[in-house]
Length: 381
Image (tube, rainbow, N blue to C red; front, side, top):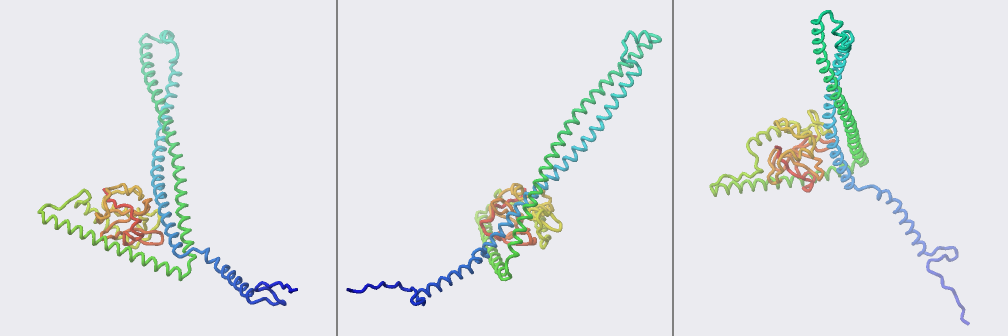
């Protein structure tokens, strides 16, 4: 009979010795586990590009919250002024009410002293002479007429004072709610900026250097696009001049072309803006030592005699919208879908703006955050 032997699987233990195949597999598994363990922390850490995007997003969110803060601050100031005016009015009306009350008291005392409540017959009989009676009756008639006027004045002042007090109470309630919105917006700005600073603080020196290099490349690309826009605008202007000369017709002046008075005002606004270059961005600031983006554009155009609203989403409606190709020095360039940033166009694809926290007022390409970031161009009225 043939003997039956069980075949051994490859890589099993023989006489207490592990076969090479099993040993190799075990070592490979250990190595893979070791690599996975070492790689886990790195996988949790965001890439430099992700950090950059997150920081940029936080700055944008902070700027949007800054607009909310600016709007609430402006509203609070107006409402506080309104409340103060109402309270002054209430105080004056209360004084008049007290005076009317005192006059009524004086009439009541006079009636008591003269016995005005006595019947006419009794008054006639008690009078020394008929003439005395008629004199007293005439006096009391005048007194009654004045008394009626005093009562009417008192009732009128009482009603008006009550209405003003109610109005002041409502205004105080609205002011309290707006102040709450102001505190919320302020806390939001501070939180976004703190988160951005924390992310940047976690970068190594090498990562910060790489981040600076990425930013430099982005600025170079933005400058290239600005130069291209400048060439296109110059070519379009030259073509329009040549066409006008050939046809012996006056140059085309469309509704978007600025007049000489606008150019004069724009020059004043730009001169002011240039004088602010180097001053720090500070959220909520309107100068003179620091600015946020809309604070700078508002102050610049105010120097030219034009009053702009405080916040970006109001400034965007404070003029005529023009195409980017028709942008002229002095125009306002708005950015992002939420219109959370604005700069002052100076020509050749460049602008002056207050960029973000930690930066300073500077000249920069309008493509500083990419072409898609541009929302619209507005020529202030």
